[in-house]
Image (tube, rainbow, N blue to C red; front, side, top):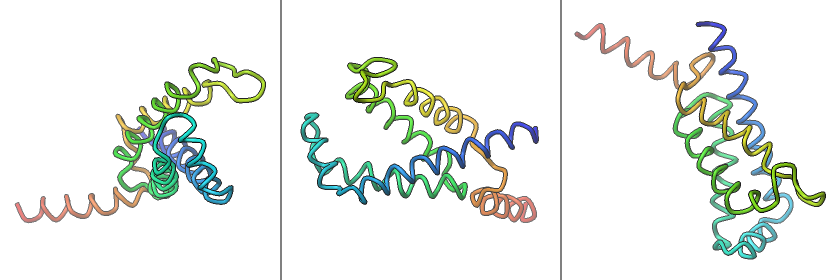
Length: 140
C-alpha cells in the first residue's frame, strides 16, 4: 500500500509541476499571444485565460494534494481536448515543427490514474478530511 502511495505522490507532484510551469509560461510569453493562437484554432481567445489559470491553480493544488481527483479529471479533459483539437492531426511523434501527442497521452494517463486513485501521501486534503472523519467517528 505504501509503495502505491509513494508512486501516486511522485505522479501527483510531477504532473502538478508540469502543468503549473505550462500555465506560468503562457502568461510570461504573453497570454494575448496564446489567446490569438487559440482563436486560430477556432476556439474563443478567452479560453486561453481559463486554460492557463487551470494549469497554474490546478498545478498548485496537485502539488499540495488538495482536490487531487477533481483537478486530475479536469487535466484529463484538457489533454483530451488538446490531443483531439491540435495534436492528432500532427501525428504521434509530430512533424518536426511541433511535438506530437505522445507526451499528451502520457500526461492523460497520469491524470486518469490520479482521478481514479487519488493520492493521499503528504496531501493537504488527507490532513483536512482525515481530521473531519476522525471527529465524525468520535461523535458517533
